[in-house]
Image 1 (cartoon, rainbow, N blue to C red):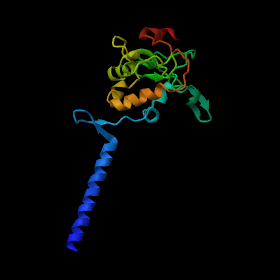
Image 2 (cartoon, rainbow, N blue to C red):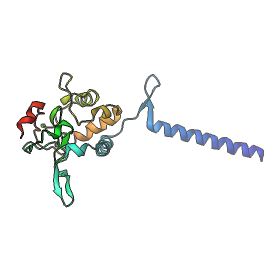
Image 3 (cartoon, rainbow, N blue to C red):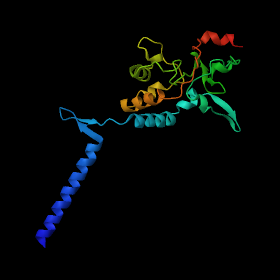
Image 4 (cartoon, helix red, strand yellow):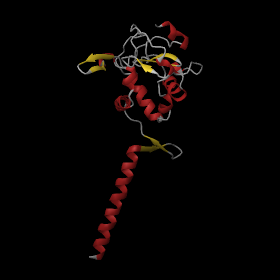
Length: 203
């Protein structure tokens, strides 16, 4: 009986070790130096995760135009992530309010403050969006806060929270980029930012 118990115990231990090893190998593989590396996931899975991340990171709040619904402005998903509409006028701005406030327009695609006026960019796969961007440009944009992902480009303006996104893992940024490159292309040339001295000309 003791011998049988020992054999059963040994078999159970072997099965447990084998199970742990298999589970470990599902999420990692070893390179030639024996270092664990993440196993590549499918493009569909990457895009799906990117969609999830874009949603929970609130990208639609600024980058998706709004339409009027029964409860007020709501996301216009037919133009998802296409940025501030090219032909949408900027209304008058109370100069006194700007002394102590920063303000969004009614669709939250434009914001005014001491830096001037900034407009949410087109993030769709269209050429007027990020259709021609490389992955490296996308990383540079979010890691270094550079417009269009160009090293010598201007700084990204508020309210873009790129310092927060800069802390995302390479895997997460890669997933977001994969999703954006697979969005419905929407042609929309977003207006260039306006400097602070342009504010006095709006009234």
